Length: 391
Image (cartoon, rainbow, N blue to C red):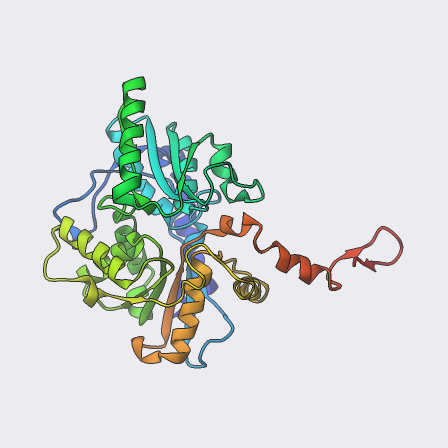
């Protein structure tokens, strides 16, 4: 099983070296896209792709506390798709921005919550490609949030124009009309087309990010080496792509998506919409994906002291950083379900896909936890001959 994992990573190193050797030619250039052979009958396929992510991402064993003894857990590091572009969103943006550039767009407008990983990735990728970015961010207040939330620092450094909108804004009824209004204003002013991107980049173009990820996982022997795949679910685009890839290649894996917002009905509806738009018949989301509800905690984007303790324990015992909004809650849900409801899993060989979000740790909410730890004798002053504890 380890032949395609971290402990035997010569093949991965070779792939990565090949990737970097081609960077000067391929990176940031729009190329024609050819879908996997097993996806050739999809009716609606993107024509263009722009190389943004560092791929393939590695898979390695994850020695996580609290797992049942018979469970063998591995992790796919999609938090390593880049530095400022880290996470799952860059996979979608390769297709969305490739399409935008091919249409001559000079600006992009997208939306999300105040800590949105998608908006941050879009801002960085857009600037790398020479595009202006406009972000509609859901926020509790119509005024500038505290700069203690450094999760938005990359977006601000990249010069995004930011608009705060009410936190409870719905996409179809409120956000989409605002995007369209802003796009018209920019187009009238500049004469250039504008690309409007939905929440999370989850549309029938962005879904190909994780259709291609499934192809990558096939090459990493995921379909033969694992029984189950688990991922966080916030807008539905990543799990939709995985579900399509799994279905079109024989559905050898059982897929689980831990919802961090909305519920299983919302996400099944989204996956079914993608299946319909791509002309994939004979399948429905309810048969392709196990949506796991019940782990939103206090609510989307809200965390507790116990959540921070959980994140700190993962980092201090495994070296993996999970964020408080997405991956932290998904991992907690996965561990709980493996212990309490093992029957919902196909087997004991489990792969967790880490979707990134490390910038979510910089919102200052976890600071009190760290202050408590380092005020209990874990920090020292060594200006003199002997170190002294800092109280």
